[in-house]
Structure formats: structure tokens, C-alpha cells
Amino acid sequence: MITKNRFIENEIINSLKFARIVEILGARQVGKSTIAKKIAFENENSKYVTLDDKDTALWAKNDRVGFIRQNLGGLLVIDEIQLVSDLIPELKKQVDNNPEPGHYIITGSANLSDLKPIHESLAGRAMICEMMGFSQDEIIGKQSNWLKCIFNNELNKQYTSKMIQQDYLKIMEIGAYPDVVMNDENFRKKWFKNYLNLIFNRDAKDISDLRRIGDLPKMLKYLSSILGKELVLSNMANDISIPRTTLDPYLDLLETMFIIKKLDSWSGNLTSQVVSNKKTFILDSGIASYYNKGKNLGGIFESFIASEVQKQILYSQEEIQMFHFRDYNKNEVDLILENEQNEIVAIEIKLTSTPNYSDGKILRLLKNKYGSKMKYGIVLYTGQETKTFDDGILTMPASSVWDR
Image (cartoon, rainbow, N blue to C red; front, side):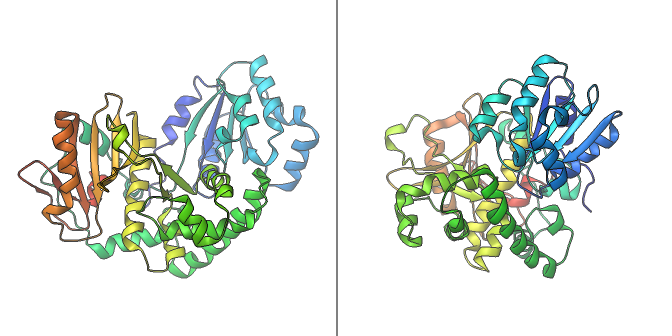
């Protein structure tokens, strides 16, 4: 059963107590409008408007002052504000004149921090709450404390999972968009096609004047095919016949729209020995599955787990950053999580039901280097039992991330 409440809701409500503007940001269709409407409905003297409505957008463009001031003294929720970004300077002026918190929620299907004029106007005035699609613990209705456990030596080393590999493949294919999670396979195929057409043919053009917007599907399909590998831009340019010098702003655009996330390479104190290439993962495994059509399942699984970890980071009170690791000897680790104390957890992600000792080889190298600073080395896999090797490296069912 899918929980009616999103874990981000409390953060949004608490932010209204001290922030002049609360931004709810995330990809289109992850549930931003639903939660914004819910909060508006539960607040007295509130009003919800969406700029997806053409008449509302026209009003906003023609009368910015009147639009922003339409519910003074109450809560005004403006959905999809990136569609009329000219509202932002007027919103800035309004909250500067009346700095009382709790009067504005804005939502956006683009990262407003990446849109320079908007970001500069909202700096110091807004609290950002980022949303993704359903996390697996939201779907089962019980929030995980996995991040807290891995940095406090509190992992359940007796954990067993009821899931088998086929279960993971199924939830990977479905992805996390609420409409997709709650419907059948035939609906899903049509939904992804329509969704991708919408974000490429309308949303991307609404926020960007790049000339090769039509090549975005080709780029995303390529990124889906190399999930689990480093992104080498020269290889990408050759494979999809697009000049290398033009790729960066288009990848930035995909990240701005919350379709992909780029992971930096973690160096610790090994800076001179570490390869600096980024790694990308697609924030929804359903999109990756739609493009791959049964191929690169290992890469999609890694991207799926990385996305689940990212959701945990967003909903957590812990300050944690996520990286990947690769050195010049081609030693790789899928994920490195680092907290404010520079403690790390190193994670390998394997689409296998029978992990072996060698799967933890690079985790051991890092453990020998960092000692107690490395809290855990974990191999997440699709089997059912947790096992501990003699040197403290764990193999754990991947469902342990969300099933507490």
C-alpha cells in the first residue's frame, strides 16, 4: 500500500515557520503539486494557483504585481513558477517589503538554483525542499533510518530479506513516479513515452534556448546505456555524433530538470591518484528501463540503488554527500558516502544472488587505507541473507536500504 504522506511534507511545513519562501523542486510528475495542494488545503486563508493553466499564466505575465499580491496575509502557492520566471523579481520585492515567514510556496520542475537570474533573486530568501519520486520506504509506509545506522555502527547484521532478484527487476522497471507506481504495465509504456515527449518538447524549451534540444532524447538514451560506468564525454560525442564541445550545457539541462544526477569522483587524500571523470545516474529507473528494453540490467540496478540512497539523503537530517570512486589503477567503488566528520561508507552494488569474496576487493583496499574513518564496506546484492567476512566487509540484501 502506498502511504498518503510523503516524508518531505514535515520539512516543508516546518520551513514555512521561518522561511519567507519555500521552494518545492523536483522533476515533473513526482508529486510536487499534490503535496502543495494538500498543504494549501490544510492551511486557513490559503490559495493555490498553477502556471500550467494558460489563462493563469497570461494573468501572471500581464500583471505581475497583482498576481503576487493576490492573497496578502495568507499563504499563496504558485505551481510551476519556472513557466513565468518574470514573477521572481516581484516576489523578491514583496518578501523584502514584508519579511514575515510562511506566505509563499513555489514549485518548480527545474532547479531554480541553476537558472541564474532566479537564483540570485531568491538567495537568502527561500528554503529549498527537493522531491523525487516515491522512495521504496514511502511505498511500504515506514521511513528508513539506514543512513543513521551506517554512520553509527548500528546496522542489523542479522537482516534477512523476503525479496528475490526478480522482485528487484520488477520495481526497477516500474520506477518511482506516482502515476506509474499505481497503474499497470500497459499504462506505464504509454506514460513514459508521453512524459518524455512533454519534457523534451515543452519543458526543456521553456527554460532553455539551447539549439539542439531535439538531441536530448539521444543523449538520455546513451546515458541509459552506460549506467554503471564513468561518463567519458569524448566517447559520448563519438557514439552519438554530437560535437564534444556542445555536450556540457545539455547534460546540465538534464540535471536541472531532475532527470539525471552527476556524481563527482571522491578523492579523500588520494587526489593525485584519482580519476576525475563524473558518473551519471538516471533519477528514475523506469526511464532507464524504458530506454534499455531489458539491456544493461546491472547498470540500471546500480542507478536504482543510487537513486534510493539519494532519496534517503534528501529526507534525512544527516549532512551526507554521495560520490563514486575510481583511481588510475582502475580500482572502482560504486558509491562513497561521506558525512561532516569525513567518515565514509563504501558501497558496491551487484545484480547477483551469490556474491563472492572478490566483490569486496576494493572495499578492503579502502578499509586498509582509512581504518576507523571507514565505518562500513558493504556489498549490496539481490540475495536474502546478510553475511560478514572475516575482515568486516558485509554483503547485505539491497532491500536493507529501505526495509527497516
